[in-house]
Length: 207
Length: 189
Image 1 (tube, chains in turn yellow, red):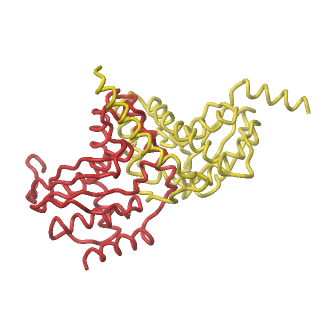
Image 2: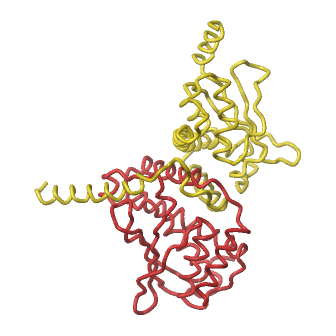
């Protein structure tokens, strides 16, 4: 590499850093902008689904891919929420984490609380967050031959990342469970890791 | 004047006729998509191309959405087109209105100056991405190209500057190649 080349790279670098800093130095305490159109989101999301679909073999892989894309969103949403919400502490207990997801996170993302939070009747380590009408999935129509596909895998990715940030790692999946008048009703199922449940037991016993 | 009229149409539609979603969710989701593409392609040129392609897919469908929400008519000339893209299109979807500048002498090329690009929020490009030519918001070029093609205008659209790469402004160049005939394409029955 010649000296001038190195120099020009360095110059480019400082210039970029300066500009980029202008963007990064903005205060994040409050959102810089409130809204974009739901259509804009839906179009981008539809392209994400289409793109992912072309690169996987089955529905499970497709959901895994959407989950991965959601996870990167989740990490950022978590950091931002913790920074902004003055009354919320970092949670590390399962129930607190669930309530945090159900209320604070849902409000930050979708401007409403999730519609219900339940514990599975079958096993202790499974919980369900239900959204009767996930607005961001409104314009996704799933073809018949893919009936088991749940585009909510994107949301479950967000939830999975946040659960992990709360020190309560879980396997999170999403399922479409339509109810009357609510064709998109989506259930986010969290199955907490074994270590998490054991820790819960210890903490309970120590009380 | 006409320019004002489109500004009003855009703002009116944004205010009363558009369902909205949290901007940060949108911004993070777009960012996550770009990261995914960089991982998958391992080549920034290919990522630019893919973003443009996705934008095109969006553009050809998005035009109906705009027409339905605003009731605007076909544009009489390319100047009007520029106005509508900037003041109606960008407003209705992203709630911004880029400035129009740098018209070419033959009135077939103009630039959109994006002072405030939502996609750029929270974003910092690694030096490697800058050096190897990633246009982070390239999806916008595809969207414009796709939407205009649906209005019988074949265009080339590309980024000239981007603040994420250290430029003073973000600038998208739009060039009219030709007006397409309103025929049924060959092989399309």
